[in-house]
Every structure is written in structure tokens, then in C-alpha cells.
Amino acid sequence: VCTTDLCVRAEEALKGNGVDIITSNGVKAIEGTEKAESVLLQSGERIKCSMVIVGIGVAPNVKLAKDAGLEIGPTGGIKVDEFQRTVDPDIFAVGDCAEKYSFFNGLPVPVRLASVATREGKIAAANIFQPQWRNIGTIGAFSTVVADTAIAMAGLTDAKAQEIGFETVIGEAEAASKHPGTMPEAHPMRVRLTFDRRSGKIIGGCACCTHTVGEVVNMITAAIVNEMTMEQIAMFPMGTHPWLTASPLAYQFTDAASNALHQVKKTVKS
Image (cartoon, rainbow, N blue to C red; front, side):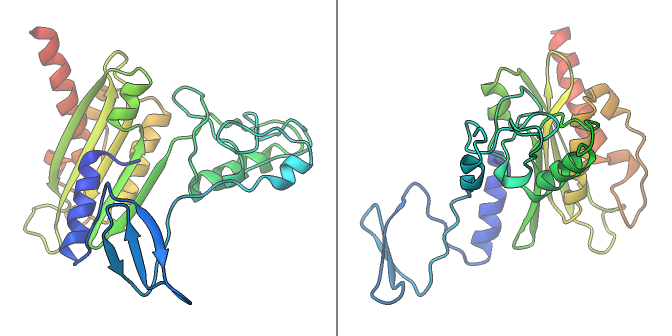
């Protein structure tokens, strides 16, 4: 879901707030009589506890759909077309129960996000009487806060992009979130953009660590949907303000694209 860089930053934020992180050592058993008292790990280590919170993702509840004779997709969601119609054209499916299809290659993807569900609901509502709005595919875009560190991501990670056949170029830029950097509450904000080397189009991106990254990642998503190239983003006509944004001389979104473009030009020359 996240790039390695974002995972590392999230781990550092948690550790800085006294949270112990255990990886590559799964839970073998939750122990206790009337309540949770300890957790037994696969390594044999036992950790005392008074509460266990389990976060293992979700699976669509499609029993009603199955009973109605609707088709279920490969990731367990109700199969729909680009208008959110099921195999029965009079029945629409949206949200976590509906199958999602990647914006990048059209294949099913298990993305379960409120923002995606809301968009699907709008598409279905527009198509009740006649097909009007098409779902052009799902792009996973999210943001969260870990301690005081905000992280956000949209589109494909480097690893996923390469897995489905993209040759990637990465552009990065970091600058203060306000300008000049001595402004009160100015913090470093880093933007990392992923482009397809062949077409130059943006296919993913992430940002950290200020709270404004939630809107930055929405801007990245808009660029992906509109298939903007690194040249177009580098020349993006941004608006800036000392209290609200980075300096126009070091605007992370455009500078990250310029960084990627420089790498491509350098490779071509050599």
C-alpha cells in the first residue's frame, strides 16, 4: 500500500511516541480466560495485555448479491460494469461490496476506501435512468496521520508499477511548507512522484510529513487522472502564499517533476 519511505517514516513516528513495533513475527494465539490477558507470538514470545485490537482488513459481504443470482468478481466484490451496473441492469452496486477495476490496466483491485465508494455512488445515481457517467477506473488515494507525521499516497507504488510492466522514473523534492522556512509552524514537506519513462505520464506519488499532504495527494490524483506528463507538471501554474504554501522557487510538486525530467534528459544525453 505504501512506499518503503513512507513506512519507515510512520514507524519512526510510532517509535518516537513509545510504540513497540514487531514485524515478521505473527500472532499464534490470544490467551486469557474471560478477557484477553496475553498474546503468544509465533516465536514463542508472550506479551501481556489487557486489550487486543485486530486490524486485518475487510472482505465484502455479498451474501444478498449471491442469493439474488448476481455475479461475484475475483476479489470477492459484486461484478459491475463501468456504469456500476451488475449483471442485472436494474441492480447497481457501489462501495466496499462492489468489485473495483484499476485505472491503469483494468484488472480487479481490492481497494476499499470511503472516497472511492462515494464516487461510485455518484456514478450510480447519475445512471439510474440512463447511462451518463462512466467509471474510468479506480485510483487508490489516501492520507493518514501517525502521531504528528502525516503521510499520503496516490496511484501506484514503484514496486507495483514495475510489477505490471511500467519502467519508472522517480522525481523528489523537499522544502518548507511555508516560506520563508523561518515562518511559525513551517515544517519540511517532501513530495515523491512516479512517472512512466516511456510516455512521461505520472502514475503515482506520495507526500509527507505536514498535514497539508492530504490535499497535495488529491492534486497528484488529479494529475494521474488527466495523464499529465512530467513536463506539464514541471510547468504547472501554481499559486503560492507565505503562510499557506512552499515558496514558488521551491514548490515541491513542480520541483519533483523537474527532478524526474532532469534524470530522463541526463540518461538520453549519456
